[in-house]
Amino acid sequence: MTDEKPSNAPIIWWVRRDLRLADNPALAAAVAAGVPVIPVFIFDTLDEDLGAAPRFRLGLGLAHLAKELERRGARLILRRGPAQEVLTQLITETGAGAVHWTRAYDPQAIARDTAIKEQLKGQGIAAKSFGGHLLFEPWTVETKTGGMYRVYSPYWKSVRDRDVDGLIAAPARIPAPAQWPASDELDSWQLAAAMRRGADVVAQYCRVGEDAAQARLAEFLDTRVADYKQDRDFPAVDATSGLSENLAWGEISPRRMWHHGLEARRAGKSGAEHFLKEIVWREFAYHLMFHTPHILTRNWRPEWESFRWSEQDDDRVDAWRRGQTGYNFVDAAMRELYVTGKMHNRARMIVASFLTKHMLTHWRIGQQWFEECLVDWDPASNAMGWQWVAGSGPDASPFFRIFNPDGQLDKFDPKGGYQSAWIAEGQANPPQTALDFYRATPLSWGLSPQDRRASPFVDLKEGRARALEAYGQRELPED
Image 1 (cartoon, helix red, strand yellow):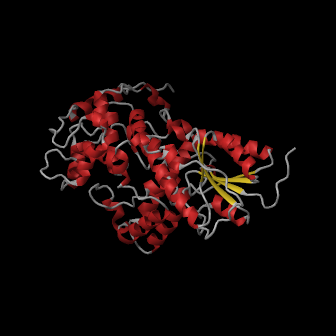
Image 2: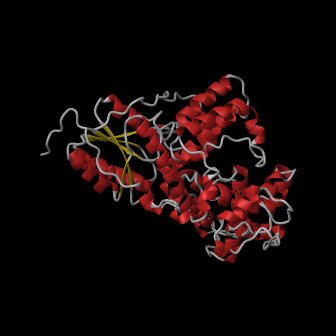
Image 3: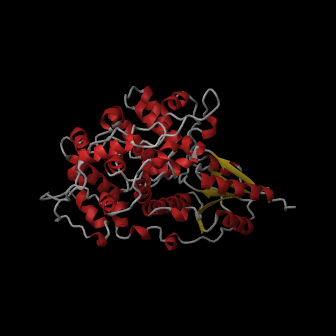
C-alpha cells in the first residue's frame, strides 16, 4: 500500500528529445496542474550509446534549455544512470506525485518506458506519456484493412487532410518547488569529449534552441519555400529549411512546422506542399520503425538477407569516411558531414549509393558512421534513408538505380559551388568551409589541404557492373 501524495505534490517533467517550452503537451499539462514542476533530464543507459556528434549536440541543447528554464523561474535538474532508478530516487527526494514525458517510438525506449510506467503506477505515482514528437501517433494511421502502410504515397494521401493538434504557448512562469533537488553539472558529463578538436568547428555550424529554430522556420517560409521543390536538390543553393537539427532534438515541434507550412500553402507559395510532404516523410519513417522495428538493425525486406554486401570495414571504407574516394560529389558530402554534422539530402543519396552499390558495402556500415557524425541524427529517418537507397527497405529506390556521382555533380552542381566549398585540394585560396575540414579531422588521419587530390579507387563503370551482377545473382525466397 502506497502513501497518498498531497494535492500539491510536484510533477517531474522528464525531459527527453523535447528540448522546448512551446508546443510541449507534457510540460503544458504539468504547468496546468498548478503544482510545482521539476524539469529533469536523465542521461540514461540508452543515451550512453549516442555517437560523438549527437552526444555533443545534445549537450548544446541542454545548456540552452537550462538558460530558458531559469528565465522562467525553473531549473533543469541533470542526473545520470538508469532512468527507472533515477526517477525512483527523485520521487523519494522530492515527494513528486506524477511524472510526465513525451513518447519515444524506438523499441528500446518503448520497453524502458513501459516498465517505468508500470512501476510508477504500482507505487501510486501518476505516470503520463504525451505525444508531441510526431504529428500522428503511429498506431492511429491505418490502411482500410486495418494494417500498417508500407508505401509512402498512400500514407501521405491518408494523412494530408487530417487535423493536427494546435500550437501551445510556452509558459511564462513554471511553478518552482520549495527546494530543488541536487543536480549534476553538465560539464562533468563531458558530452563533447568524443568530438575532440572537432567540437569547436562543428559548433560554428549549429543553431541551437527553440528561438533559433522558430526563426529558421520563419525565414525559410518567408524567403525560400516558394522555390523549395525545384531548388532543394542543388546542394550549393541555400534552399532548405535547415530544421532537421532542431527537429531531431525537439527544439521545434513538427506541429509548428506543419501549421506554418499550411499557412504558406494557403498563401500560394508553391513549394509549401512539398515541404509538408517532407514532414510526412519523417512521420512515415516513425510509422515503419514502430510497426517493424527490425528496420533499425537488419534488412527490412527479408529477401535481402542473402545479398552479398561486404561487411568488411577496410581501407576503402576509411577513404569513404574521410572524403578521399576521388569523386568530388562523394568527397564534398563526406567533408560537409564532418565539418557541420549535417549533409545535404541529395548528397546523402549519392554517398549512400556509392557505398552500397559501387563499393558493395553493407548499408549498416554507412548507417553507423552517420550515427556517429550527424548532429541531426534521428534513428527512424537514418535507418529508412539508408535502406531506401540500398534497395532493401520499404518503398525503396530500386537497387539498379545506381547514382553516378560525376553525372549527379554535373546535374546538381553545374557551377561547382558545392565541391569548391568543401574540397580544398587544388584551390589556390580555398574557402574557410574547406579548410575547416582539416581543423576538425583527427591528426592521426594525417590530412592537409596541400595534399594531392585522392585518386578514385573504384571505376564507376566497373562498380556499376559488379553491383548489377550481384543483384542478378541474389537468392530469392521460394513462393
